[in-house]
Image 1 (cartoon, rainbow, N blue to C red):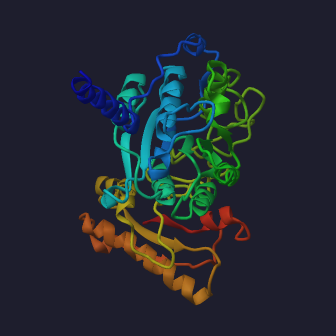
Image 2: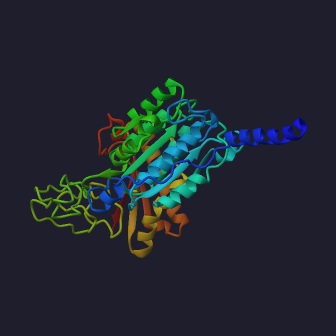
Image 3: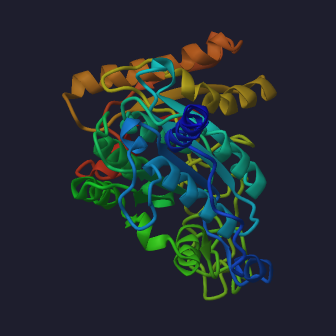
Length: 418
């Protein structure tokens, strides 16, 4: 009798062990905590346009979580439960979402990071379906710096305010994630917040997650146990995603009081959000002539706060001038305008920060301007329509004494030539 029962008993034990090893689907059932109704009645509006969930799926996340939210579950399972809880708390809103994982580097070295959701219009069911697809074992190294850098590259190619939610145990994170978050602050700090959610057993990992969040002016660091209840999750979702009143044109007047929505950047407004004096925008670039330093930009040109036609989002590697392939799409705006305006000629002007000698930076800025020209010529634009010039650091538009100022000074401008 015992010999007959033993195989069945062994099978039960084996199945139990396998179930404990696998990263199962999130356990949270849908939560209904009232945010949807408050959102639909207009009490809250989105304060971001894009959110990025950066999820650690490396080998350290396979360890059981010792915190209140864990039990016998792995840190990765707790992380997925957290995302599911957050997803079911968020109202249906017009934002875009991304889930990007990092890890699995030992078994799959060519897929150290992977986007499993988006970038797409947010839907609760769509995000949950993608979350359920993360059914592999947590394994491999932790290329956190690479994942954060790729998130930054995406932010540089899109419009709108952003929230980055970084979920990890904070252990053995590779690729200098501190430097990558610092770069996010320099490049996109005015419209990006960075939040860390710690799911770990080692307090040093929690301290490192705190340091990551401190690199950004906007954001916070929190332990998953602090947002386990419905009430705490509602407060977290409000803080990350929502506001009681938006200021869409950033003129300092909330939309609910703004009688002149869409005021161009830099225009002085009254308490109603309307320009204090009647102003013109002769080139239609969204910057009034009174503050436009580059009047006459062609229709459709992407301009900066000065009203000048700029090559938006293109970043160069340190001491290099070739255009990285992931930024090629950002040059399509220039190509499109040139093809629609066959008589339009342009000069591409390269500018740098003040790191290095004057001679070096003039040469570097010229090569970067030439790289953009080469790209456009490769797209069918006649060489004769484009000239280039490098100015080095002789024409700064911001303070070179700050990281953010140096970032603004490393730019390329497009000048229409008649």
